[in-house]
Image (tube, rainbow, N blue to C red):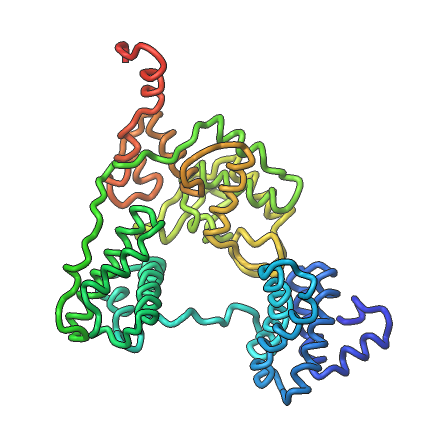
Length: 420
């Protein structure tokens, strides 16, 4: 594989003679299979060769012993190549550009893959409260995404207690919890504050039940009151939807993928993670049907496959999707080829809304979901039908879309509204 990129035999011989030569050649073959551009190979191989010499000079004899030299090498590389950088962020980027290929190469050599073997961070307070994650999953029946959200908030509490010098949960007090909430809630949205307080109350009740703390401190955490139907849906008009779709350049692979994702969001009111998780098996081309399994409410939905959506997906599959055995439909537009994430789906929606000049509060994938629902409400479908269509578990979740008739309110604001 090295001969494909390096014409001179002496260059290939020098790479293979390197202490990490076998690892480098394997890594180059992997980059080729993952669709990396040639310029990335030419940029990374010299870095890897220097790392091989750097680690070997410090006693590394294999990939496992070389791991401890990754960070020292990144700092060494930054000290040499980061001198001309004008900011610390630019110098950090130099270190990252050296660290990332080295870590990928060693992961590939030792584990046979890059990224897939990585384990999630330990659940916060796992040593002090070992059964809490299992309690959330088994007793409360929460899904993995919800458990991760609880872990995110508890990580904040763990960091706060470390900074405060609190070594044990038994030393936690109401004033300490109040100080944490004052610090952590700054800048959070109302719903995020509610979720944070809810997580703390569940955690503290569990700790008291398991006798990790003497008193039940959950009452010391007051959950902010949020009123149902207090907010206005983040829907946009259908003309703005057309403007947004018109900003997508479907001549490139990225545009073909994003166009298909945006149509799925606005046509079926899907969530970002539901679009990201669609597989080839979920599309029944013969019967023109799209299935969405494992929805948020624990059920699945089946939709007729709209012609415009089907054509967009076919265009992406034929002309833009990378060649891979993975059954997911949508993939990253840059190497390495991996299935797209829900965050990337939402980012694509934000990008094209901004390009179209559409101003909306908290733009994202849910903006198009709200737009789909609002269009169904305007067409006078029943709440039950709308809720079933977009996968709502309760009719209460759909009621917010009936709270405000925005078109009627605009007429009232601009003229005589007595006729309305």
